[in-house]
Length: 130
Image (cartoon, rainbow, N blue to C red; front, side):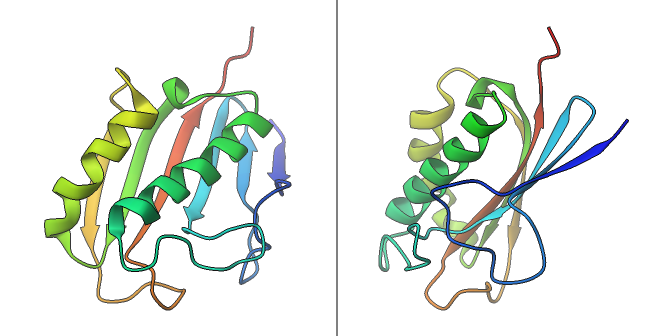
């Protein structure tokens, strides 16, 4: 199997030495997605739900580039500054995932890479090979 690194148009350039996603066989590993616009500016201000919505819009760009959808997401890991915000982001998750229910881990953190970020989400995706 070969490894393919993806850099996706429409996303801000990574802030460090990584790519937006890595495909290995029929799996896609999406790096932690920030709530930023294409220029790297934070979207959503202090609203964790608005930040989450931007994250999923950005994640959709990665999924589209890989020929996948939210229905193909196997697992998400959510990093929140305040784990009590889970109830505020869950309705946004349902907007994007619909009936799909990926495995999920929620981790409370003290700080995220971009000032003002309240949430960051990474994912593992199963790609169709047919």
